[in-house]
Image (cartoon, rainbow, N blue to C red; front, side, top):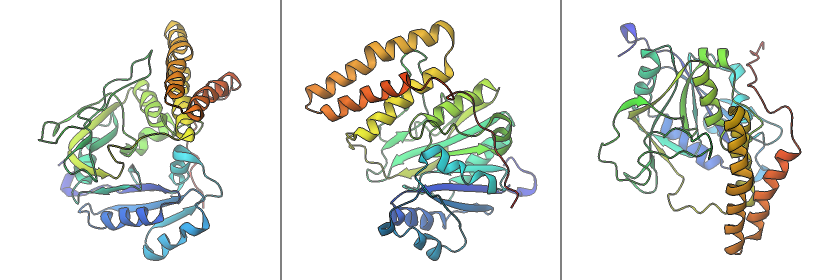
Length: 313
């Protein structure tokens, strides 16, 4: 292993709950079985509805640090809310709709501990409800024009073909271990995404700062997102499309930026909107165009990464 005398560093674990307290409790029950000895756990509630009874999470798992937000801050800001309180050398950002293998964390920590220039690492991800089916075995690089990438191994049966440790095109937000040192140097996740593309944006900033992004196939996490899930919410389409365009605006420059935005505004979004109309989903078509309108009316304050203000309490 990478650490002398098997003295494992503290890992701060952050998961965000929003109207899914039972799912969050299942995640915590799974996490109680891990073999890694040094963790602290933060559950951030993004202003769940009263009927979700988010406060029961703290009652059932009294050892966790429970943070109650006064509004739904989204993925990035929800996770960021816990960062000022974290004492760990590494931060594990992990979805509440996951369950973990008992030995999943050690291989991830080994990767970050092996090289100070590795800032982020994600494990192999299986679909929880379709056993041995891969959701993620690494990412291809994001195409700078189309702002698309692909999950390696997606939908394949896991036969060990991705049990490797290697650099990857981007990080997977459902489960990512991040160096606190890199966070302090580069900045925290950009909160203006709200949902979608924020982890890719963060990884891109990390790479431009000279860090490397890794995939660890010797670690396994199960994700409760169904492989057959149909994404058909106007909310989802709006933020997914908005995030894709924002990534281009924030991370491209010069002619590539012009080319990318031209492609997104004149080809990708119109094609997507028309496809929704042909399927009888005018609501999704409208959501696509609303995301474009958002960008046309928001010219400033979308660049850079905020830095962590350490908690003094």
